[in-house]
Structure formats: C-alpha cells, structure tokens
Amino acid sequence: MDLFNSFLDFVVPPASLVMLAFAWPTLCFVNTCEWIYNTYFNPSDMEDKVVIITGASSGIGEQIAYEYAKRRAKLVLVARREFRLRGIAENARLLGANHVLIIAADVVKEEDCRRFVNETVRIYGRVDHLVNAASLGHTFYFEEATDTSVFPILMDINFWGNVYPTYVALPHLKQSNGRIVVNASVENWLPLPRMSLYSAAKAALINFYETLRLEVKDEVAITIATHGWIGTEMTGGKFLLEEGAEMQWKEEREVNASGGAVEEFARMIVSGACRGDSYVKYPSWYDIFLLYRVFAPNVLKWTFSFLFTSQGVRRTSLVGTGRPLLEGPPQKKLLMAPTTSPSRQRPMKME
Image 1 (cartoon, rainbow, N blue to C red):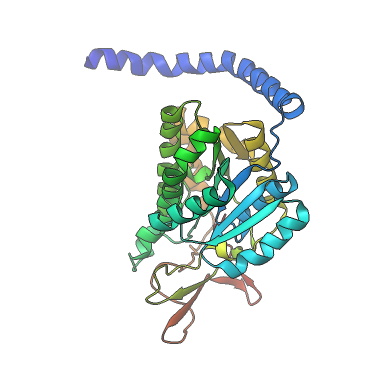
Image 2: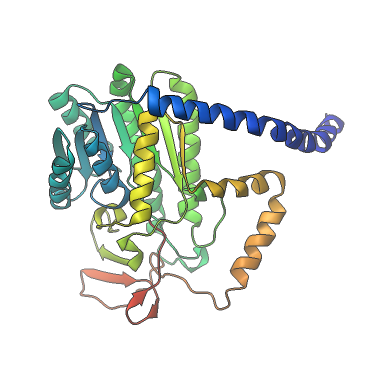
C-alpha cells in the first residue's frame, strides 16, 4: 500500500493539471450557457416569496434586504436590536417589498431561531429563502489574545449563528423547495494573518454546507457566497463591550454599513440565488490562489510570508485581546483599533 500511495503521489498531481487544462474551457462554456439561460430565459420570480434574512440590521445583510425588496419579496428581517431594523424595513418597503416583518432575535440561540422561523410560517405560511448574513471578524494575532472568552463568541456567531437557523428552517424549506444563502469568506481556505479564528469558523461553515448540499440533494438548494475584503462603516474599528451582557461584542450586523463593494456583493448574492447559482464569488480572481493552495502550497506560503514581513513594524487591532486602548466607565469598555492618523482608524476585517 505504501508503494502504491507513493506511485499515486508522483502521478496524480501532474495528471490532474493536464485534466484541468482540458476540462477548464469546457466547464467555463457550460457555466456561461447556464448563466445565460437562467438570467434571460428562466429568471426566478421572487414576488410574494418569503425571505428570512439574519444579520439584516447592517452591512451585507442590510443590502441583501434591499435587493430582495426590489424583487418584491416578503421580507423577515432578523437582528438582535429591533430599533435598527425599523429604518431598514421602511427603506425596503419604499424599494418595493410587499411586506416586511422585523423580529429581534439572537441567531446563536436555538430557541430564538425557532421563534422567528415559527413566526414567519405562522404569518406567511412558508419560507422560500433563508439568508444567513450574520458574521463577525477580528484583526488580532492569536498570540496577543489574553481574553479567551471572545473565542467561543466568534465561533458562535460565524458558525452556530448559521447552523441553528438552518436546522430550524430546513423542514419548511423542503416543503417549498427553497434555498439557503450563506455569507462566507475567501479566508475559509486562503490563509491570512490576524484572522485565525475567523478563518477557522468560515472553513467549518463551508464544509458544513457542502456536506448538507449532498444530504438534501434537490429538495433544498444552497448558494455559498464568498468574498474578499469588503469595506464598511465598521472599518473604523470601534466595538462596544458591555460587561455581563449575554453577547459582549457589538456585532457588525448591528452597525450601519454602506459602500460600493458591499452593495455590489449583495447584488451578486441575490442575483445568483435567484438564478439558482451554487456559488457566488466576489471578486472572482481570488480563485487563482486556490490552485496554488492545492498544487503548490509552498509557493503561496513564501509569497504571503514575503508580503507580510515586508511591511515593517507589526501593527494590529487590540480588539479581543483584553487590552483596551481607551478607558471607559466601569460597566463598559470602548476598544478601538490603532490609528494611523488622528482622524483615521486602522481598518478591520468585516462583512
């Protein structure tokens, strides 16, 4: 067996590259034909369809809500703080949403997920699309973290905050032959410093949904959307931590966000989901690094090592490290990323 594996180690990689060289043009042609057909001849009509969007109070989730509103869908907007959803709901109505329901809930709690899904079914009678947009990033080096309590928080929001809504909504999605839309990130396979826990959570998320795709087969469709760096208003790097609160992080889903990249990515997600795409990528040129990751990982490692070591003095955000930069009142701490100038804070990874 060892000899056989040694032989395959030698033969399979170059053979795979040859096969890929021939298969890639054919695959691109097939994908293009499918895109043209689904876009112009078989568009998905979302009018009066019921769409649940978690993390809808800011950022990508907010913009996704507006895109579905333009398609005259019935929206259920979910986030922890209801007051932020009210203005978004009104904007969605003005853009064309037939009906908008807002529900305050925390996606890391199964009982909350069960409540907003059951409420949706009670009012509308169905669920057609479940959009999991809640997410939280970080920009600290792992060795700098002194408060390990943030570790499960990151995993909860980025992983369980997708799994729980999916688990509860899945029976209803099967009844409607609906779709799950996942907000992921290229960091699920592309190694970048200061994003270790975030990347681990996104990798777990992708593997979960790829496996679920095989389990549900044609009963429920899944669209996995991945993106690179997307700037939002939260790139200012400000977080409010309330000591003793059930959720100590002020998630990005609760901070207003806008910008061309966010809006474009949201537009691509909704268009891809309505067309029936299995994957949406923004920008698509990131995929070239995947070839290096699979076939020449050392090249990717050397390249990234050179890029990040050539920046000189290491700078990082102290968010999540337990070392606040600014003092706050006894019940609250205001943590802020290092600034490059008095008026501009260092950007942080957000969705």
